[in-house]
Length: 554
Image (cartoon, rainbow, N blue to C red; front, side, top):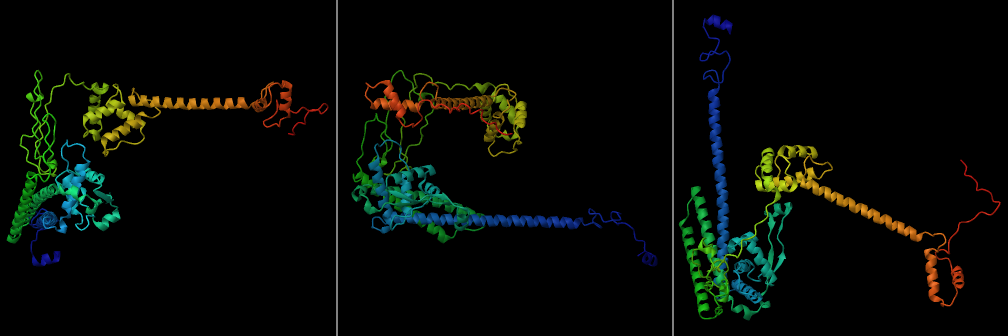
């Protein structure tokens, strides 16, 4: 290269013409590769944005698929409810759910001992069970607890209580218990839990005459379920439309027309059933209203024929003030809607509250704990020293420390004693900080060594140990005394008869006449076989001249 430069007589600079460096520099536009790095970074940013856009698009498609499945499921449920309600006047087999629900209402009314109390969600949950079961036989009803709560418009706890009530009335029999599936079953079925299965009682085993009067109430319950399911379906469709709009889609005119037709059909069905129920109530077909005196508190009893509870007014009393004079009422300010027979929970009736009078004396206050004066300061210091207790309420930490320690403890002394008494180090992030604090105090204060300050937990531990030791010593002493008594009874004392001889002599006295002399009794005792030994068993005496016994050889 140098020879070529000499021949060409060209003055070529040794370094870069832009930065003058002899080696490539990343920041230089001429000899470096900064433009390549910038281009690569820009391309990576574009790729990352495109990947995020694709991930968001696929997540949106997954949500749309899930929303479509929910819409289809709710549409099928609405169609099933409408088939049960609309098919009953024509005697269709798919309306078996109406008769099954009427049978449950009859059983529940017969088992009730009072009409007081708020209506439960039994009718709505049973309606979901009846419609979910096989319409041919009324078996294999397994809607699930969460799904039943959603379709019935109540809580899962109310669903559990309603299932228990239906089973207790003999209306439903649980054939399969719900359980959590194993890993292999989850992989095979694709779900984590197995639903409970119920078989409903066949109609021929019920009372046709008894359930005939509850058919309007069952129809009203199913009509409310239809209306509630239609509202859920409308909400699911709106959610689906929103997701489709985000994805750039739209709602077709045919689908919108089908939705309008379904909503109109549902409204027509609900209005027709409610009109029939009103006619049944007004005509006296269902039950005549049973009015009681206004002095008795009465909850809504719509399934008994009462559209709403009669207003009750507390008796006016002079010289007594009510708490409502100063405080706002907890009752709802909206006027209750009229309820339909048998429909518990969907139509709330007016429930006036009785008058609340001020008690004669103040309520007794709860005694303040002894640790209330010092435990909160200790808890604040301990939370500042142990970071894993920062998220626990201070009152709970104070109660835990106050029940285990004493007023002389400090955060530094507690930390030092815990690290000394426990051979394991403290956890940094325990799963349950309060339970871990109890376990740490239990380990540190129940050991053999005494803590530096008096602690209530250590004192209780010492008392328990002392009681256990006293019980052990008492048991050992009782065992030793019993052993001594047994040895004293079994031992033969000089000049006295053995227990066996006394027993034999008592038997001889019992079977011989009383005029026998003592010598005769003694002779009979000596002649008796030595069962447990005679009088006193003397050792064998060596005859004279026998000499000393031989000494043992070494």
